[in-house]
Every structure is written in C-alpha cells, then in structure tokens.
Image 1 (cartoon, rainbow, N blue to C red):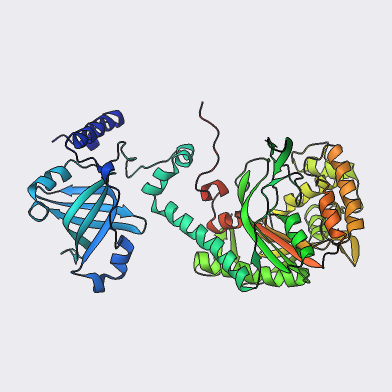
Image 2 (image 1 turned 135 degrees about the horizontal axis):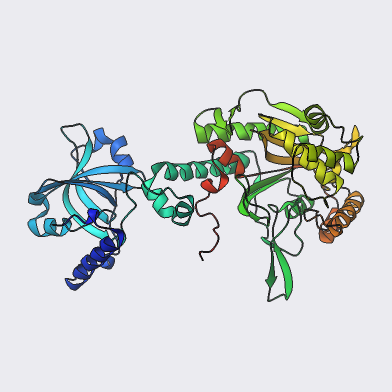
Length: 489
C-alpha cells in the first residue's frame, strides 16, 4: 500500500476524500455516529494506572502516529489530557475491522475499548478489544517535527497549533486557572459578581478611544465599553452594594503591540468604605495567589526581569521617578521642555498632544526600567478625572498602579464621589477632547446625577489579561485563543 504520508498535501487530501466516499458507499460513514461513551482519558489512565491495570476503559482521541507491524499496530492518540499508546491486533478486533483500520489516517478521531496494561518497555498503554472511526480528517495535519512556524498561520489556524503543540494547550488551561483564581478570591472576600452593559451611549470609565457602532432599533450611535462597567458599578455603590466585581470583554480602538489588544478580558472591582491602603493590601494578596495558582510558586521571569511576588513590593512616586530617571521636574517645566526631552530621547509623539499626555509619555519611558513588583503613586490628576485628589498634594491623584517588569499591571484609586468636582473635571476633559485628545474622558451626566444621591467613599481597581501574558513571558496575542486577524486578501 502506498504511504499516504509521502504524498503532497493535495494528493493526501484527494485520497482521504476517496476513503470517505468508500465509507459512505458501504454505509460506514463516521458522521453517522452521534455518540461514543468515553469513561476515561490519557491523563486519568496514567494517574490511576495501579487501579486501572487490567481493567476495561473507553477512550477517544485523534491518531497522531502509528507503527505498522503487519497484523499488529501501535498507534498514539491524543485527547485533551495528553497522549496514550493503543495496541491493536487483528486477532482481537477481527479481520474485517482490522482491514478498515489499516485505511485510517493520521488525524482521524477514533474510539477505543480495551484493557489497560504496561508494555515490555514500560509504556502505559491500552490493548484494544474494539475500535471505531468517529470522524475522518480530510486534510493532513502539519508535519510533526516542523509543525506550524508562521505566526499568522498559527493564529488563523489556532486549532492546528493546539493539536500539534501541547504547550499551547497547557497555556490556555493556565489562563482558565488565572481567571478562576481571580473570581474565587473575590467571592471569598465577599464581593458580588455583576454584569453591566457592553453597549453604552457614552464610553466612560477610562482614558481610551472607543469603537463606535449603530443601534438601529434606538436609531442612535453607541459605543463598545472601554472599561469593565466602571461607572455602572459605581452606580451600584450608590444603590447600596458595598463590594462588586465584573470579569468580561472590553474594547479599545487603539494600536496593536506585544502588550495591547483591541478586545480583551478585564476584571474590575469596587469596594465601598475602603481606601488605597486597603486596596494595595488586597491586590498584593490577590496577585500572590494568582501567581502560585498559575506557576506553582512565587517567581517568574518576564521581559528579562526576575519577579518574586512574595518579595518586597516597592513604592514608586511618579514625579520622583521622572525626575531621577530623566532629570526633568514635571511641575517646573512647560510643554516645550517636555517636547525637548522627548526629542532628545528620540521618542515619537503627536505634537498636538496636551502637556499632561506628553508627561505620560515621559513616564512610560522611565517605567520600562522598573522591575517591580511595586505600586506607582502620585500621578497627576489631569491624567484621570475619576480619582480623588491626595489631601497632602491636590495636584496628584489618590491612585495606584501595579508595576511589574516595566509595565502597568493593574490600576486603582480612591473613587471621586463629589459630583460638583467631577462635573468640573468632565468639563476639563471635554475641552481636552475638543482640542484633539482622543483619550479624553467622555462627559456622563447620568453618572453625575447618580453621584448627587450620594456614593460612599470607595476604592476601585482593574486588571486585564496582560498580567497573564507577562506571567507567561509571551506576547499578549500568543495568549489569546483566537486573536483578531486582518482579513485575507
């Protein structure tokens, strides 16, 4: 019999379709099978081998390799939990079924009934008593040792990437552990999980450019949310809920990089009667639990930094870090001074940006050298209208950011609950927007009206899946199951 694996892609695909046609003609199409009662998997068999040895199991998976020894074959099948060797003899399953089996291809999905045993070489295996074809692979899998190398192909055909690379599959198992740890931690701390609107009339709660779409039934433009229900959750504080959180997708119409996506998962919580000190203690505890759950310990390497979450968390002051790192006092200079400094550093920027947006670019330059873990404090109030001011220095926001491996890994602050002050700040942001600042906050009169009924002092905090990508030391798109791709030409 000709070895199908030595043929080119189109020839293999043609032969596989011919095999399917033959199965259909004989009434043996695998697509007529609706169910296979699986009672075990590769991981369970390995873990419970002493208990399962000699016992019958039913396992299903994709054929990944085979060794043909005439009337006996060894194949390896892959399921979600790993790989399992299957031993198949003609004398055990019958000549007719064995003849059919010999025509099956790498990539086909099969079901196996058999007994667990260990081979003479010590490999845990299943000795098949019966087998069945459950789905036919009409296209060949990528070549095993080279796999998918092109990043664009890997992202477009992520299912093949996962089939061929067990590490990718494990990555997304860890990502589920990441978010379930966040959710369980907050629930254990007494927070209530809520759901808030994805479509909003005003895109509020963050400094970011939104996606706009049209709501036909209401005949109005709406925006995809740029925060995880920040203003909605604070309305819930007004309503009397004292601890809420939400985990979901949010959307920002901004540039793509190894750290940024246009749509991604975010968590935000809001905690009435708490301040930044309370928030830092809770966040530190949360991040340590996440790290242990995902990595098994307290340490990981990211972007060339060695991070120990159980170590000391430093406090970084916004003004002092820029002054010590770049030699510029942000409260003693002007916009020309900021631009001169950026020019001397060969940093590209939009010359139309406001003074404080340019200062923020300066901060991002010096931030890259900070290892962390630590908390940034003392951000200028102009960069965010929603926090309270620091009592000891009203120029600055009562705000924190988690800094890890030279990047922001979470943001929180003492929530502004003064409606008069907020009205003024929104008006300042509106002026910034009219001057061309695409990241200026939108005015939300409904939220201000809610504040007029009284909102308790509170701490709010948010973190996105960027933290997970840094823990894995991978670009963030690598950590998304199906990243958004430009349409094919």
